[in-house]
Length: 207
Image 1 (tube, rainbow, N blue to C red):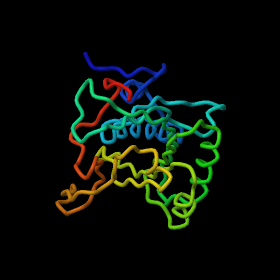
Image 2 (image 1 turned 30 degrees about the horizontal axis):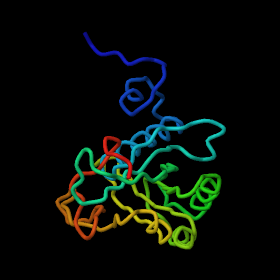
Image 3 (image 1 turned 45 degrees about the horizontal axis):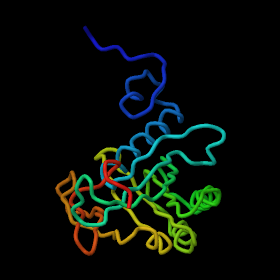
Image 4 (image 1 turned 180 degrees about the vertical axis):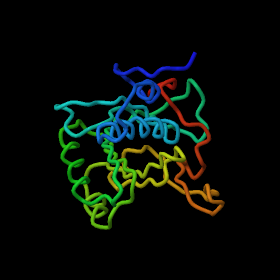
């Protein structure tokens, strides 16, 4: 018996969203799909666990959750872990992201208790003009480029204010072979100079 998609219904994650029948040409579909894809990629590659928020009172925030920061490069279940509050704004665009969206995220961050990391997750690169308010911000901010085709976090950077709330977790890069067989870089998280081998999650104790 062939599988039939639901014509309507609720969704809470990427799997339940993809089970529904959609108008794939609509901006709402593309935006919601990118939010769920970003949610999955942030969890898989960075250890950020979020829930999707949508509505008139979301203050421009698409995802809210926790970044679980390890206290070693090889955390095990039961180890201590730091919790960092996170808000994420998702933008899927074909053109480069300008400073407007960085300033919007700064505005959303002003309503949050601190420390809170604000992440701007996009499907395209950032302009040089966008990097200026991000770098100068006194609030913790990170910029992420999401590759939905390869399901990877292609680029990641955070500002100096963010360094103060990452509890020793550092950012580095490593060389990989891309889908065309060419060398490329991908971001990796480190602790005390060593690549974090196992990303922590909600199963670890808060420290």
